[in-house]
Image (cartoon, rainbow, N blue to C red; front, side):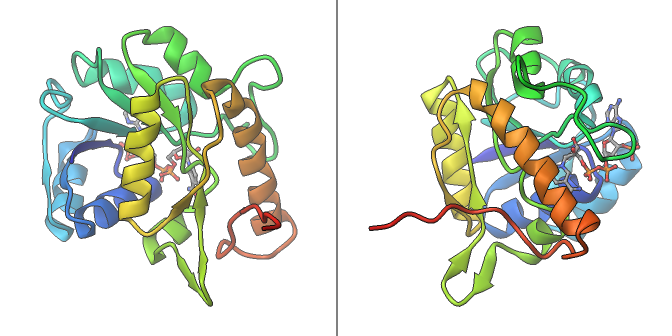
Length: 209
Ligand SMILES: NC(=O)c1ccc[n+]([C@@H]2O[C@H](COP(=O)([O-])OP(=O)(O)OC[C@H]3O[C@@H](n4cnc5c(N)ncnc54)[C@H](OP(=O)(O)O)[C@@H]3O)[C@@H](O)[C@H]2O)c1
């Protein structure tokens, strides 16, 4: 698949690394093209300028702060009909809370601002360190990605990408369920940092056969 990653921070770099390793054609863009070139050079990817970066891409991973997501997506050109994978968590500055919730979510706000895009929530419960190290925790345990979207195509795209990178997936329903996934990431952050478990953790679900 042809994937554009916007952002070269912890998550952006992790996506470029793992998507390229899974055999996808990965383009990376950033407001500082030198940072995109550095990441692209490290992995098997290409750096592209922001303007027009969305062209010919099958999907876009938005790996910037939640409050910057709509602006970053607008900056890459026409994204009507594109699958947008929203990995963001709308965290407060101290990472201890969420700036939106209950009656909306970061994902729904992105979808509302960019009605032509097919937005899917996912990967927001995966720590950057887990993304970089890989989804296989050993002993048959794989990290779960929970795709939530109103677009079946977007959900299928997120599922395909996640599984190609070694994650297991669990269908999390419509985009509205981002209202649950964003707080779940908050709990994961509490366990990782507040409770001191570290970042080599991930939420999953068990299911009696
Ligand atoms: N870190 C995690 O474990 C984790 C896990 C799940 C989800 N997430 C979510 O993933 C997203 C990225 O997190 P991160 O940890 O990768 O953050 P990060 O390391 O701070 O990287 C943020 C990236 O966003 C770019 N950026 C910031 N403002 C921008 C703007 N206005 N326009 C374009 N690009 C902009 C930054 O560019 P510059 O280098 O130019 O500043 C940088 O490349 C966040 O929404 C976060 O909530 C993070």
